[in-house]
Image (tube, rainbow, N blue to C red; front, side, top):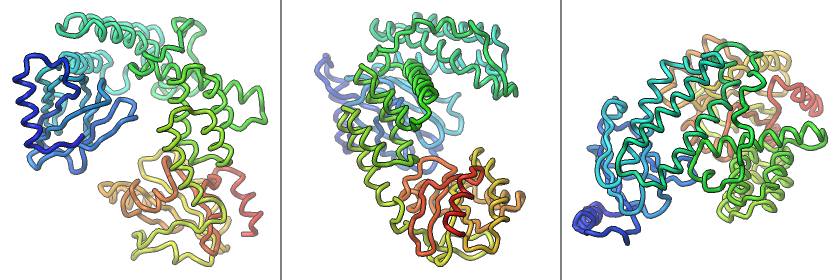
Length: 460
């Protein structure tokens, strides 16, 4: 994808001079980000199946070619996502101030009609939903009425913008219906959370409009994230139903078997991959998980990616020497390396201050630490907070009186120790034996009674 700046300016001139762009097999993306945050800028598809790094100059300007993965694209500067739509022959310029994105973002050039529609639609939808979480706090009738208003407003906007192809309009109108249905689908859980009604259930006929929805449309699955979410929700329910009907079936096999049975290749492969890329790092039966995925998927790229993860996970299987961390800052002062703890079992809690489930484990972790105080085990809490949250980490350790060895990782999610263990979600707990070998790279949480059972089996 990368081109020299000079070469790309030549391409710009060629596009601007050429009368017929029908045979051009690329698009040009250029622009300027004012007050660009530190770090990389990426271009990726909505579902993140494609991602590439964009080269940005010191003044925030950039220019690049796109030769594949056309369609809905996201430019992300590490702080603000800019959504746009690109096709072959387009020459799109994106300009904005990252400190004031909403008021300053501007799309211009050849082929920006859809991008401008998406921008205006986003603004109108935000206005209609209201401040904060007000949308999800609405009662059923008001929520459904507002969701319908968002849909009809978006349709009217789509019809009002000139230059958008009939093909896109047809797909987008279906997408807007899916967006409406997806908003109904999420209402129960979101309303329960934001309206503080933990036992809330929707009325029996609330989801009546979803009845009869076709879950086999591969074209819409590719085009619409909302349709993809509805399809995923449909098959997730099937997997959960399968678990309930067969108590001997593990969660992993219930999901893998459900997704494997989908007749449509595109849908089957995507749901298999989406589930597997995260859950393979948590499975209790790596070999069966991997074998089932490989026999079920027909997407070679997905199989190669999961194989890479599988190979790395084999390296952190039970009995293997643990990956190490070196000289992580210790809250009590100085630094600590994993080798400093040899001679005792080490129970590592990988967490962050922003992680709700991590914080929820703290009271249970304190109880376990107290129970095993002066035993042959060290308790290590390893924060993967970003460097900007360093003070927040120190304050939380102090305010919550966190015990054990409190360490700060050297590079957040990109810390070598985190990557070596293939950690893709937190909290994550790891148990290492006195010789530095792995007992369990996915150890039970402190709130799980299985943890004490494990400790008892090891005579800790």
